[in-house]
Image 1 (cartoon, protein in one colour):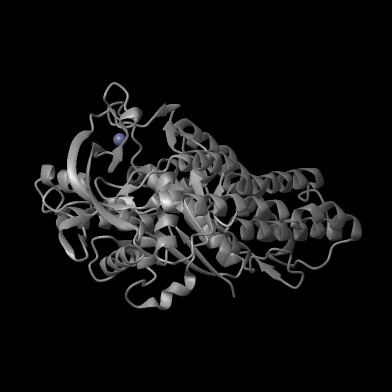
Image 2 (tube, protein in one colour; image 1 turned 60 degrees about the horizontal axis):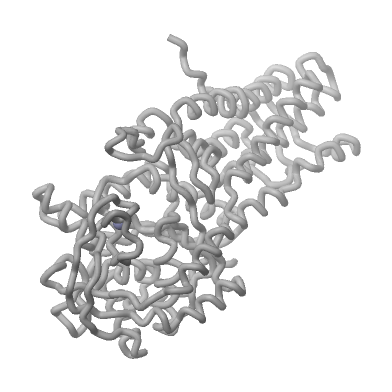
Length: 494
Ligand SMILES: [Zn+2]
């Protein structure tokens, strides 16, 4: 059994979980479930990034002790993951002194031993929104172009990481595909960024930033929040403590948002190389969610709260919409109107109707049971495309989840068409039985394909047909119908 290790980024704990992070967890979950379906042993990590200036100040403003504040946010992220039916196998928190701190401090020591961390005084602009120094040349009218806020002018003594030393090595690994960045547009972006990668400040004076992990053997300094946070991917595996979980390293996929590519494809691999470790195999980069074509922002009042969304729709509907409507590697739009449209056309009228029709026909025409059995040659030929999952699998391996899901809906459309053409409600005897045996086989296959995306729905279809979900039709399988409530009830018109 192959091992597969996938991570989401860890959510920055300065506010309640946002819909962008919900999307990232859902995407990660689809991949994790797919790999399990393929027989892999999967470790799937998510968690919270709890240190740094922004968290400290937000807690201060809320009048809550920082630890209490991050406990609450981590609790909310965990609760959201459960409501979305995320199958993560672990949840790491960077304020965890037992699991996380030893790893961050150990990698720091390894980097010191390699001569890659040095202390110097530094003067520059620090954007708290970014939790990073920002170059003067990147400012627009003195403001950070992303956060539209003035950075702070800092002059302080910091530890620096010799990132420049690893520039060529990282470039080589990216170009050879050893470290794959998906999609390719992001590879180019990163290679450009790599051109002028400079050494990075890796600590802040503890006086300025007491909320964080102390630099080993230098109590005057706190680790830079990114140096600490990136280590979560190995601290969760037990790096620096109990290392049994390290058999999962290197990660197969780090799933991240486009705004943190630089840290994951440049700083993190450099840290690992410095510590004498392998770099991750792939970084999948997703885009942002816009709302009705506009950027989400508090001032526009168009922020989608994932918890509110889940109060209106079951997890599978939210998962379906996010994975189908938002192209995995690009920005995508959220609109309530589209959610409603997709619900009615794709779920209620598409999949839901198909399941209902076939189950009812088997019940009324065949007494509720059938054996899938074999089909005549012509039927086999016509249906052979259906059992072909190459396109579906290729979409998964190149992080095009919307295409894999689109592929499933093509099958649903053709299955509905097949029924319309054959009109089993008018057929009799062998011909009717054949149509329904084919339809049942198709549905068990569709449910199999749906498992990574809509696990509950897939399970429900299996329950309705009383047979195992399989990639290719199981000719021996006996279908026995137990109809429950409709999978996707049509919204009542009031
Ligand atoms: Zn900024």
